[in-house]
Length: 349
Image (cartoon, rainbow, N blue to C red):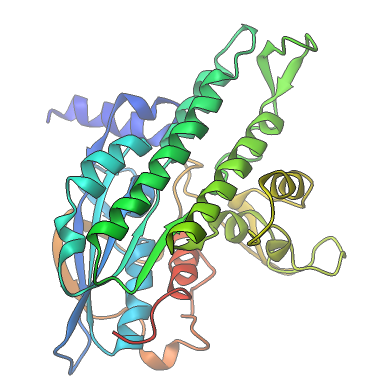
């Protein structure tokens, strides 16, 4: 790949609106090597640039992306080495991840030592639809947004069906839903006008209900197919304390609730106290930036790694992990997501 093409690809991946233009496989295998252990188990993660640990490079990704963070907690719980296999394609839409990663690369989850399989998808479907929507002039068309929602629903369900078929030794199957990158930036009017009212549309007011519908469907499908739903929207988009005095911690007020209807969930989310992930409030006196400077990809702790395979010791000792949380569990987007998924891990191999 020429340097000019590499720069163009990085730019297109980093800007959500042009995510359709380019994709790149960013596959890694990181083995967490604990001292005095012989058993080794596997975590397999499928997805796009989120699970890839994208940080602006083509051949370098965040080492401690969410799947690796989860794997490190699992290594402690199992007292075993954990190989975290990330089969990811940055810039890919849901159908691409389903067909070319989950199905085409199913052999990784078919290994008999696989204990956890996780996936995330749909982010690029929505980023592309949002970009096309904001570029519209004249009368607004919402067809692209609805198509993204329909495709996300279809391929999320197919992904769960495929994982249930192929990952026969997995004790935990996890799907992560979608946070809202650009929440503050989207609080602007479109250039197009609504056909019924004749006025310009607030982009966030239109997009937030769409994401809420998507997240409800993801978690509802998870319950149907025996998956755990990691609610990244709740962890990223609201404070870790009761900021509005309603007696409920903000993140819990927006968490998915089993048995709630889609309409009720959407109504609750669209009227909730939400905050941009760039200013995640971890307490009344502290905050953390959960998104990188591209306003899309999660921040991470520690170093990067090259695509390919590598091995290393855990970043934190067992004594540093208190109540199931490492010292940096809430300081970056990937650490938070990895911790969240670790709460869904099996307790024994």
